[in-house]
Amino acid sequence: MEILLYVVGIVFMLIGLGVSIGLHEIGHLVPAKLFGVRVGQYMIGFGPRIWSRRFGETEYGFKALPVGGFISMSGMYPASDGTPVRGLFASLVQDARAANDETIADGAEERVFFRLPVWKRIIVMLGGPLMNLLLAVVIFTVLASGIGLQQGTTTIAGVTECVLPAGTTQTECEPGDPSSPAAKAGVLPGDVLVSIDGSAVSDFAQATAIIQAAPDETLDMVVSRDGEDVRLSITPIAAERELTDAGGQPLLDADGERVVAEVGYVGMSAQMGLIRQPIGTGAEMAGENVVRVAELIVQLPVKLWNVGSSLVTGADRDPDGPLSVVGVGRLAGEVAATDAPVLNRFVVLLSLLGSLNIALFVFNLIPLLPLDGGHILVALWDGVRRMWAKMLGRPAPAPVDATRLVPLTIVVAVLLIGMGALLMIADVVNPVDLLGG
Image 1 (tube, helix red, strand yellow):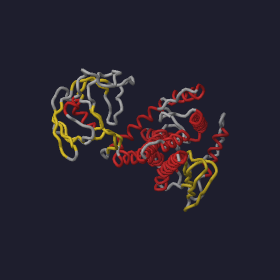
Image 2: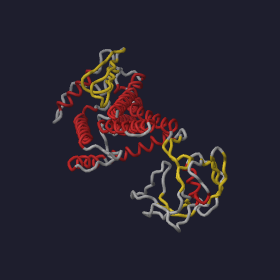
Image 3: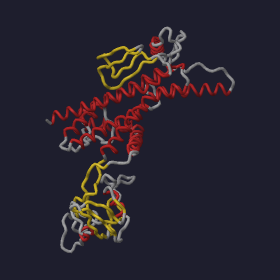
Image 4: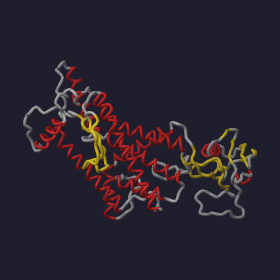
């Protein structure tokens, strides 16, 4: 059964990845067609063709390797004028020009990408990453507002009998230890918090905020017990405690150390559950993920070095480091096979898929060819040249011939392939352990 669940997790992520890639390419396809560009192919995957069918002038299909996708637009670059190309990479540039010329069909010379206004070219190339961002926002919104995030509920799970000093190794109350405010007040496990200090509470985080802000102040508290409201009086003591977020995780400072502060403390804990969040929480989660992925990309050379080092030494991988498709699939399988409620496993899988789409969004915006960000940069440079010529009263310059950047494009492509190969090998030989297995 565990093996079956493992496979289900991998299949779920592969389907999710395929949908994400497909929507990314639709983000390019739709505006390209709306702007009149001839699109010859829409493909999900690379390598040998598995299936395809032509509708109108466009061939739609799937290829064997589900690691990306593409659409083939006519005239991504200006048609070659027959001028010989000289230099070390002349043959590569000439081959790129010849391949580009083949996409310009007879009778459709005006329906080429490079003739579009700059703003339209940017929309076409930005459409793919934006589709991934939109999908991520939808996924995180379903998670946060539809299913809910794992947080402390208003149901009391336990009451501490006494107050123990922060950082102590003592686990049990001893004679002479002061009773906790919750125990003094008569709070019982199973009580459901209704209000504190006159404010209704809908989750434990709200209750904690009120209590922490009121050390040595007596608060009125209403709990529901056996279907009846019971009024209690509770006085939080001032105590040094490690601060936690809404999910119950420790707050860390800039140095990664747990934050300790003197706050109100009563000595009660909550049952954990899925709490639905406001509708804008999904967008906030997506934004936070964008920042994290952007930071990861900035640190990518160091992160990749660490991956290679751990591959050689066998040291534990950085849980915040990059993963390949193999690593994501492996992690999805492990999540699906864990001994946890089905809904909790589904939440984690959806979260992984949302994070994957954020990674696709940010990574594709890197301003290097052959990534979408590289094409956007070329379009912007073309626009700057045209604007400058107009300001000086000169004729509009010829469109930027990005085939001259083929050598750089090949270098970037080789680096991307090398990075993918390194991560795949590492994810097989020395995978990231996020589940403590």
